[in-house]
Image 1 (cartoon, rainbow, N blue to C red):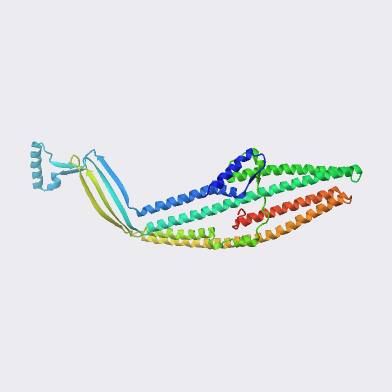
Image 2: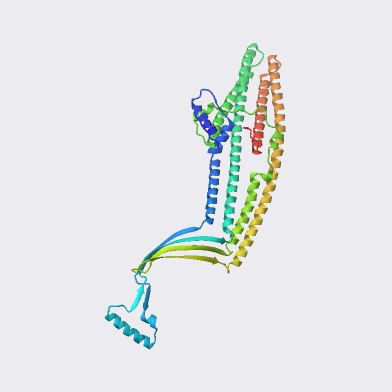
Length: 453
């Protein structure tokens, strides 16, 4: 992944503390940083690396295993002792002969018996190559390959989830920024209306209570503005923490996110880029789960099939010191055929058949849920698009009502309360439109549309 967007993002964030004017934070820079620095992205990347390491580990099963073995011993008593009785037997003649030989041996300082293996040492190098292990080597490598594919899909899902969260957090902040601007516009309207009311009070056209009511509304707007600014700082902190960037709390009030796009993509544009559910990341993961169960069954059954291996060993030994040691080697082959475990193997195979069938049932059920989710999101997207149209009409109507009330107030045909109500209706209409637009953008991105492009 390219690092330059992330570096530029970090520079932009760090420079906020020194900027005299508001710094702008684009959405794409947040997405680029989150794809590299967020906890979810980093963990998913490590899972991919771990799966690849496991794949490399499985490949080593094809390589002959080489081992070095050394042995040294020193026994309290010789482990081998051969007497004349062991050689000649236990007959009367043998005992007589053994007695005579023993007597002569002692007379000449010779032991009438042989003993060995009291101490010694040896070194051996062994090479073992499995030829057939019931298919477990191939199945193990295939299972490792499935793990790499699954980890890659999980990483894509994690990055998609991170991007969805970034967009959701981002557009929520943008909506609050617009709401703050709406409050500023309402405050400016009240300030302008206050001047008109003062003149009207002086002329005796309106009562002092109208001016008092207006000042109460100004106080409410100031409180709302304070709460909005505090909420914006907290949400910006949450966003920057999520994308993995440091910040200066005091400078967050000057940090501004990009405004909403001027024109939202239509439902047709969003839905045209959606790939079928059957080829989605979730569907591919479900297929891999079934395939993994099938491979696990092959590995389990392979434990009860014949095992064939060949090998060679070579080493040096001096196991009967003080005799001289010697070099020696050998080649060998092993064949292992389990007999008594065949019944156990049959039962284990049936157990894996049941688990495989369960995995297939889960896949079919979850696929149906994915189709249902897709249909519901499409319907919700189209519904939000219609609601945005209605909200725009409501905003235009509220704006016209406010303008009419201001004209009527100037002509002495309306009251300050009516103008305030019209202003409140316009603020509410704008907030409703912003909420619908934010929800539409978040859902569009969840369906695969990138508003940053």
